[in-house]
Length: 180
Image 1: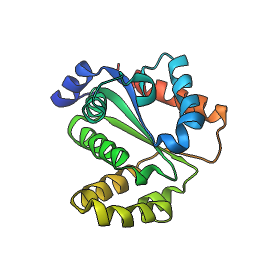
Image 2: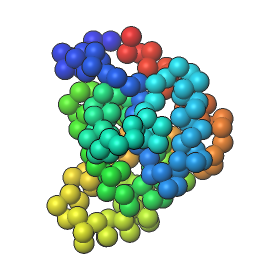
Image 3: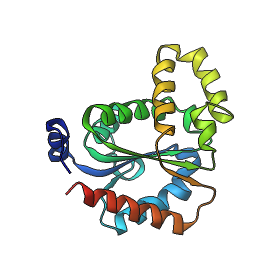
């Protein structure tokens, strides 16, 4: 596989194999913790802020740096994902890294319909109504990043099944091997 010079530079600067973007409120203690452990079990260095973020470090700069230094970003879209401006800022950075550095982006639709994410329906629509009142300066960029990410090939998950986590970790391990 031939890489552009920017993609090659990106690979040599990568610190993490996988960055996990998620809304902790509805995934941290269920699906996300299982996925994190499954990735670690496959020898894949995963960055999740609940495990990797050093105490006392500024959240925004640490997370943005972790995204930049990851080879793959996994976005776990959940019911409350779009309610978080932090998640949407992460998402914008992830899609920027995809466009500029060739970072692989894998969406996981956890208890949400991929079409609802793409078309901003249901809980995603409700979240953006609120953001339009409070964060109008960022809404356009967030919408673009959200619809682009939700249009990528990924997985749709309706439960916390460990088998799904292991399947995801196997596929991510295969994608990781493609880089070498």
